[in-house]
Amino acid sequence: MPDYNASKFYMKNSYYSNRKYIIIITFIIVGIIFALRLFYIQVIDRSYTLSANNNVLRYITQYPARGLIYDRNGKLLVFNEAVYDLMVTPNHVKNIDTTEFCTLVGIDKAGFIERIEKARKYSPYKASAFEKQISKEAFGYLEEKLYRFHGFFVQPRTIRKYPQSLAAHLLGYIGEATQSVLDKVPYYKSGDYIGISGIEKSYEEELRGVKGMKIRMVDVFNREQGSFQNEKYDTAAIMGKNLYTSLDAGLQAYGELLMAGKRGSIVAIEPSTGEILAFLSSPTYDPNLLVGRVRSKNYQKLSNDPVKPLLNRALMGQYPPGSTFKIVNDLIGLEEGVLFPSTFYSCQGPGTSPIRCTHNHVSPLDLKQAIQQSCNPYHWQVFRSIINKKEYGSVKNAYNAWQDYVTDLGFGIKYNSDLPYELDGNIPESEYFDKIYGKGHWNAMTIRSFSIGQGEILTTPLQLANLACIIANRGYYITPHLVRSVGSPKSYIERFTQKHQTKIHSQYYDFMVEAMFQVVEHGTAAWYKLDSIPMCGKTGTAQNPHGKDHSLFICFAPKDHPKIAMAVIVENAGFGSTWAVPIASLLIEKYLTGTVKRKDVEQRMIEFNMISKP
Ligand SMILES: [Zn+2]
Picture (cartoon, rainbow, N blue to C red):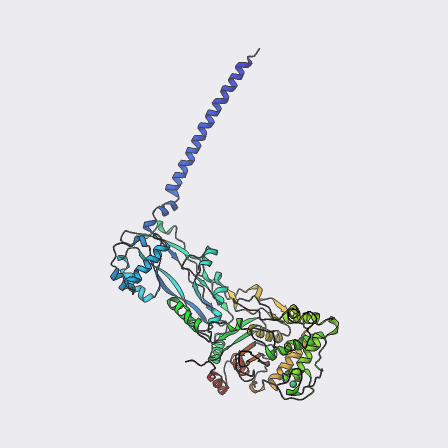
């Protein structure tokens, strides 16, 4: 009979001895893991050594050069220039001749103490900028002697330069990343630059490139002793991508010349592509003013200037469109079937009610004549017939339909183009009138000024130029944009290739093209028509509650297969035909023929100065 107890004992014994082995093996494994880890840390992974040796290694950020910016003909608009930041690690500053050092850097002793304190506040053992953006020349002088000043070293970086001093509002500027940016985006470190306005802002990620890091060994005498670990841990900076813009630098320069001494803006677009050819806000400033060490001083000066040179009027100026808006109402009237080219209305000139006419012309007149003469009473009838259209059942419904058309034509909306800080103007919702007049207590008469582009309607120069594009294209637009391609001249940007087809049929645009051609041939813009180029346009004079009327003109040329569409606004300059028309016509002549023959007109425009400077 088997001894169960013995068997039990044996099993128990074997169980304990197994457990003993397991414990021993576990200890051995853990020991091996520790040993391997230690070996890895001490022998293989040098990153621990890097931090342990922090005080003899110098970490130098490699700032990449920002991408370059070109115009549509390959002309360089923005490039980079080398500057140098003098860096300090406060705890390493020992036994230096402060007087000599101050002379070398060009500061006084108080300035020295102030800078050191500031750096110490940031970190006593980490390097930060002591003096920023030292020029190449000053750096050459400093470099030779710097080894004598422990705790200091120089870090190269670049700043922007503008060889043509053009298009300040469009290109924008860069500046140091603010605390809120530093908190939000880990890429940026204190002292890094970032695009603040213009395409420097909208293409920041493409332009900035990728920062690198250089590690250098430094001896106790502040002298670099070469690379660390054969540059194994160094990373190279990657230069930012170049931007290839659609701007025509020659046209832009000419526009800036013509607009000098005036308030206003010009937006010129190639209708078939939506590419911005010229885009200016006047008064402007030299973009080189907002670069480098002089930036903050100049920025203060520019922002305190009463003529507001920093304001981008082309994107942020919101103007009543005046008579240029009549063509919007006409297109809607035609599409809605309440207006026909053969529709006649009469006009009694200045005595007409409820809106008087400002021009002398035949009466009654048809649509084409009414556009040509910019007749106010005619356009009041057009607007009234839209708002009173019976099929809509109510004024409110008809107004909502009208508003849909206007929005479809690019008003009251932002385009989401590549230009930051765009404003959307104002096309009020019907609820707005319900609120101020009461539901059912307003009608076409209440908002009659909308018939001539006045009242609450506000538009930006960009939107008006886009309207010119829509008519030039007989019914569509492509989001206006400045950058054609990023990185290489051949790549293209998908969202800037899509057509926005409007709801209005092309035959009405064909009619409008003819009517706008007549405006330039025989109408309000006839004085400045071009012999060689058939041009289409519409003048406007926008009432301005704060002073003299604004002079407006939208146009495109040539009439068939247009190459350029434009909006010109000259603030407080009176009739559209007096200033906006000649400026637009000179720009078109320049762009399409390469030269300007009408030197007398050109001279008169350049000399006209509305901004009296002390
Ligand atoms: Zn009239």
